[in-house]
Image (cartoon, rainbow, N blue to C red):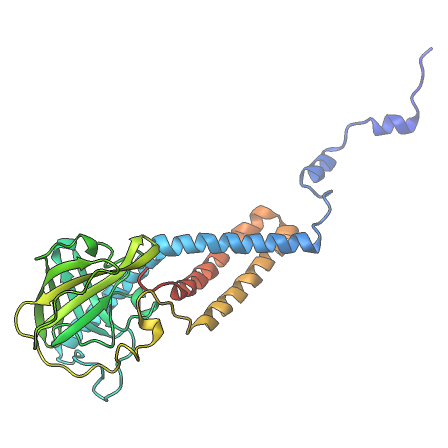
Length: 314
């Protein structure tokens, strides 16, 4: 005599239908995340996107931006020199201070294969485009001591290799007043004594960049070079060493556009929240495909503003 299973037991022992397996595999039976966990997920997404954007900005995007800016500056400055309207002093034809980022000279360092347009000003954002002229010093080629800042690694790192310059190396600078040839007299680490006093009616050029490893400045490295030949006259700088704005000094950041960083971060937060919402509604893969490119673009915009806050010689 065989025992008969109850009907309910027999039904429950039957294998699940294909549709049920598919729904279980899709995770439809998993309860939704709590608001707290969803917030944590959004924060992690935000941190992940910002980290990726900062690395891309430093390693790739900043160099591309620098190269594009230099191409535009070179065309602009070449046209100004050809037309005889290149600036030769701290003010324009209307006696107004030159705008930050105005091209004022072209520098060539053959031994380092450096060929860059020098712009007016030394704020962190100004040095995105290329080396910058410190505004409390005369223009290169003019009588006195001219100082030019340049980045060590980010945004093309135009002065990243000046520590390898040897005494006697030649630096050529072209301005609206002509071409001048400078001869390197020495490399000056942080704390080293100043070079000999500058002779009357002569010109000295100092190139300054960050010392230490790339993206981790540990001071300022300077290279001094003296003009070979007679210096030309020039207007008095608009600033003195004491009155030069702090954001234009060595290793200074620039917080004047902090509002822009706050704006981009707000957009980025909204994008991260939308991604988490789509993650719960559409699925992880679909949400990342749709929202990651947008978040990356917003992250790059925010990281560009972050770099303005970092040391200008980095």
